[in-house]
Image 1 (cartoon, rainbow, N blue to C red):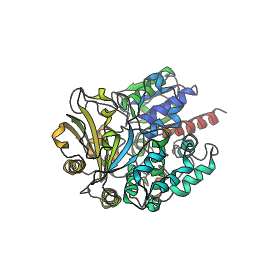
Image 2: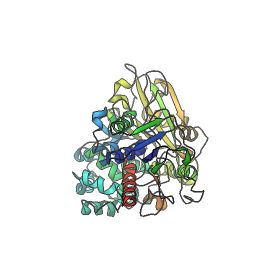
Image 3: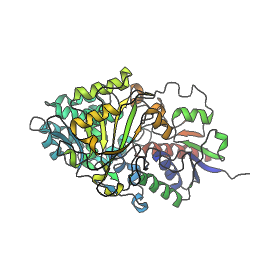
Image 4: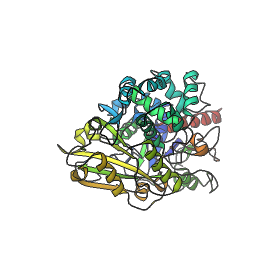
Length: 475
């Protein structure tokens, strides 16, 4: 009869890998199963266009990864992970050739916002400066995991950030500052009137000042590879190319941890269709990876120095694009774009003199149209001559994103809408959001708090829930 494992993990994205590592570090026997031929999930690197061009199919810049309490507690640099910091974390250009900039310092960022809003920005960020370690640990955990380390700072973030980003930006006089914050909040693909979007913008801005918006050398795959190598050194076993369809296909274990969508967990574990009936998936991405003959010819000089560039000419246009995709159920005519230019800091990811670049806009969940023209029209607006540099492109709409990663249901790379109770209670209101109706089955994906991003904190928190359950059962 097969020996009993302590834990079996399904899905080798950053959260599944983190959960496996956390449990293996506690001395548990851990076995992990991944459907794809390589580990990675939302942190992969592949030759999507031409030979020698290394693209990140999903996440590329990693402010939350560099600042993750889970990752920072692991010796991942020993396994090849190196963060590369662009000169500027983020630029947000405008039609007149100027740009708002999220720089490494609060002062430099404030200076780019101009004299009318510089002081307001400094006042907004002052309560949080130098407090990333405690704030991130408090904000990203769950309430039962001990008292906050810095309850005053956490309360300040809550009082300001619980409001919509449109409320937070009322303190600014010019739209450049409002557009910068609207773009930061847009990473959760929700209109600026949504509660908690203020906190998202604040955390992203603070991350730039405290830990940067770096890229992983060689691509995001190196994050996943480092986690997997560390897991193996801890005695964990990793299987790839194994698609799990039923719970009884897995080895016997005391606990099963799923880095999957709630829908897939319910199906595999036999929990029934009502298990997560209230869970909602959100708007999708339409993403294009480019192989370029040269750097992006941004009109804004600062955009040429930034690792990430947001394209949204005004807070009003950003809001309209997000409402179209997430509320109105249509593709925006002028999409808000998130773009990253990895070869500015990692030239080895393309042949000499060439570049990789990615951009995505937002579309309704499951949308089957083509946003390529609208995306490139926006790029040409701020980088005239961009199309002339394109050597090849890899286009991925919602269906292709879901094919690449089953967690992206309908193309929703956040694995759950940022709306209603799901802004805080993911995947549903519960004291332990990682547990399920089956006492031995747990959810550790970004569908659970604290949500999307390559930071491993959903896996970290889920591992604590598993450990508590198993420890209690052993007593």
